[in-house]
Amino acid sequence: MTGGTHTAEQIPLARLPSGVELTTTVHTYRGDESGPTLYVQAAQHGREINGTEVLRRFHERLSLESLSGTVIAVPVANPLTFDRVSYTTPEQFDSVNPNMNRIWPGNSDGSITQRMAARLWEYVAAADALVDFHTGSPDMLPHVVYREGDERSRRLAEAFGANLLLSERAAEDASDEWHRRGFAGKLRVVAAEENLPSITPELAHNKQLLEDVIEAGVDGLRDVCRYLGLLPGDVPEREQVVARNHRGQVTADESGLFRPNPALEVGESIADGTLLGTVYHPTRYDPLHEARADRDGILYALTREATVTAGDQLASVALVHGE
Image 1: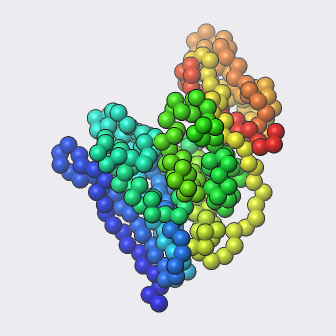
Image 2: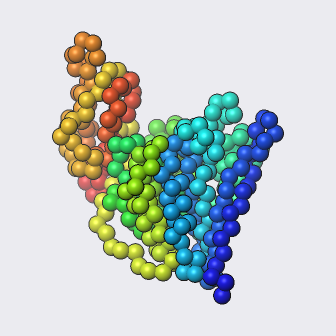
């Protein structure tokens, strides 16, 4: 027995106008024993870097001797957004398809973002399960998203271990807004269409490394490996809330300064009509909009950013299944 192997391969994703190759690193961990292949990546959106740190710590703590099967890990899926600390590819490089998580499985003859996705899709297509790490705002409850009705993806989400699991309707079951925003091109959605169990852990926070968030991500990824049989051990039983990812959310009717309701915390159950906060006029001081929940559910995001523009998202409420 060799004890397993680890390789770190720098692969070309696309070519810049200067002729410089745009590359990233793909880590491949192979155990001595046969088993499934898990593909896991982070930083499609370059400001969402906690997933990248999760993969570094997973690398440090992984015992190749105990691995059965293969883990393929890409800590920086989109180097252009990573270097820019941004959500989208700079317009100078791709003004047509700036958001990588809208154009999967990519196109090897398409725009630069499509070409990067197509190159990574070669690894995705060889996998038996997928974990796509993302992070949200600083004021969001960590959760895992999976495709509603996809039981294999749901079980993968349960294994990851977040307290909140959000199912998302897709394809013909999704809203017009879902299609309008290009969500059919998300990596998780496209992978599920290809019968690949897929989840998106939303670890919360961006641009900063948060210890508790990162450690939860490492624990979750290791539990996914245990669930798949890649690592020994059992996945602990947990009490988890399963809810529906509610698109549309609560948005600002007016521009101004937003003061969130100080009595609220993300993760709590709220009722239809609950005051989420108030938008004020910054110079006249008069209230312009009282933002209220539009249904019962779990408050899983509430912005703390004070300056808002009409149409900005103020809060997200998940609809608990069975309600």
